[in-house]
Amino acid sequence: MESQLVLINHLRELRTARHLSQKELAQMVGVSRQTINSIENTQYNPTAKLALLLCIALDCKFEDLFAFE
Image (tube, rainbow, N blue to C red; front, side, top):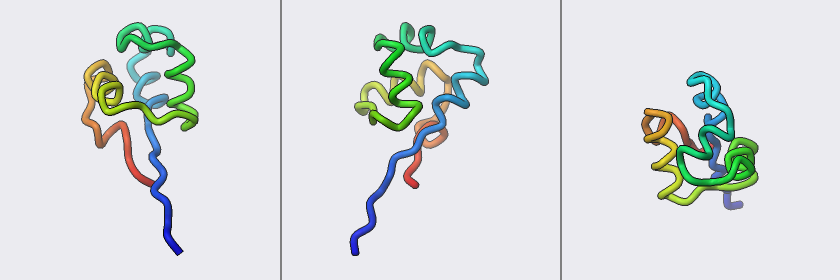
């Protein structure tokens, strides 16, 4: 049986630690608040470009934001 890799993220934790709303973070990276919500709820996996923009906006490393479960 082949196991599937599930991408998890710590977006909500990192965003709230920096006292940012979903809307504020969305404006910083050029997406909608709904996109941020979908990423936080693992309903949407961001593109590589968006993932890097999120890391820059949150001043964190990629591996601090995303991991495989």
